[in-house]
Amino acid sequence: MNSNNGTGAKARRYAILTVVSAILCAPLVFVVSIALSSDHTTNSMSFSFFPTEWHWENFVRVFNSGLPIGRFILNSLMIVIPACIFMTFSSALVSYGFARLNAPGKNILFVIVLSTMMIPGQVLMIPQFILFRTLGWVNTLLPIIVPNLFANAYNVFLMRQFITRIPTELDEAAEIDGLGYFGIFNRIILPMMIPVLAAVCVFTFSANWGSFFGPLLYINDEDKMPLALGLQVLSAQSSGAQTPPWNMIMVGSLILILPVLIVYYFAQKYLYESGMMAGSAGIK
Image (cartoon, rainbow, N blue to C red; front, side, top):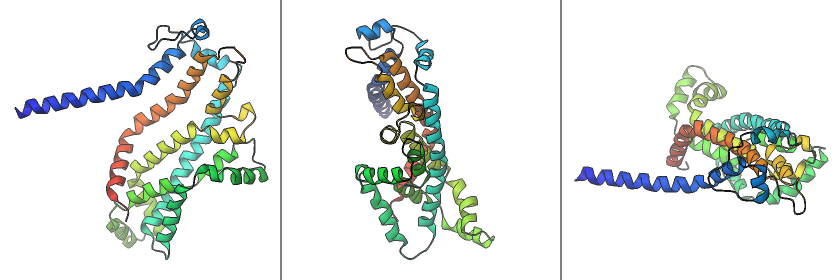
């Protein structure tokens, strides 16, 4: 009897998960259907939910659309790769200081760091623009790249909570062996932080790969635009009553989406591990 109840509950869970997954995947299926549509279907706007046409050549045509799509992708990589490397490492270093070092006023400083998460980005928009314009960085990638090289409050909080779960006896044993603070961080703490490092790297990749508003503020030239902003230019090529090239736009959208899905797929194990440990740690 209990076995039957357990099987029934398991079947209900799978049924609910299947329905929720189908609802969440529905927009992606429609995007694929439009991306594989012909120009005639696009002009007549007679799209179907499931793909009925298979124009795979659209994935080649988008690179011959007159826009530097390859350059857009390269610019996105120039933004994402330094951010993933330097922001992850700097956040780990700062969080180690908050978690392990003893300094007067450390807790007050940590609260101040956390309070920066409460400041809306719109408040900082104009001062940042004036600063970057004074530095001569407008219409370059520097206003998007440089701020993302440094630790941010959310990453510091997440990593600090992870480090507090690591036994301090490991630090004491390393000190007996002659390691200093940086040696302990580099040889003991950092290798044990791989799940949370991977999680922060995924969050950073996701946030920067699809970055749109920052590039819209600072970049004017097409050859300096990242992919998300370049797709907006592709959609703006039509004018008046002309139908936008939705099939090409959806191909570009898939190029924008797929790297994020791939990164999430391979890092989901680390996301789960870091989330469970950070969530169960509490604030100490």
